Image (cartoon, rainbow over all chains, first blue to last red; front, side, top):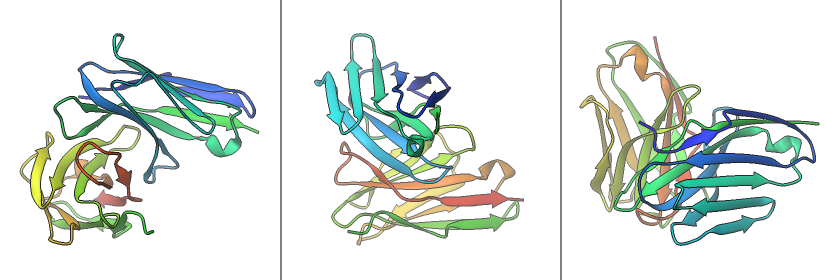
Length: 111
Length: 112
């Protein structure tokens, strides 16, 4: 079973617009990580947010974490065609040692 | 610095055969994890090794096994291949168990 569930499953936007995707999970976590995957190849680590953090930024990426709602969001600002990819959230449980991935959000950025 | 490397890139096997996939972690990383990703889905955890010991196992049959060597590289073995084993197999390395995991490019396994 998948701990994290992303929403929406797919997203189509114009270049320059912002893209927001959400992730919900079920159990207590140590941290939550976001990854990008292009064309079914390896995953690229984007950002890690720990359970005691509420917001993190990295370049055009902004991640929030609400542990009371067991949810996280990833915002990509000023999107580019190169941002076209699948985005996955993955959670590491509080006493766990494995990442549990959601099904991903497929983002298409049209030029 | 070199990232996580995996070999081979692609592999075609027939049902019932055995396959060995290999992974070299980032230098200095002591933890290696294996994931299976079926087309259109997120990766599913198979194994985690840390300091050459198995630290976690996902919900996969005993046909799947792995090991980690003294240089921290790892092998994933799958016996008696089934059509449903066709997937992208991803290896990830991290400094320790709870740190960021960095993924290799994967091995695309097709079972016919």
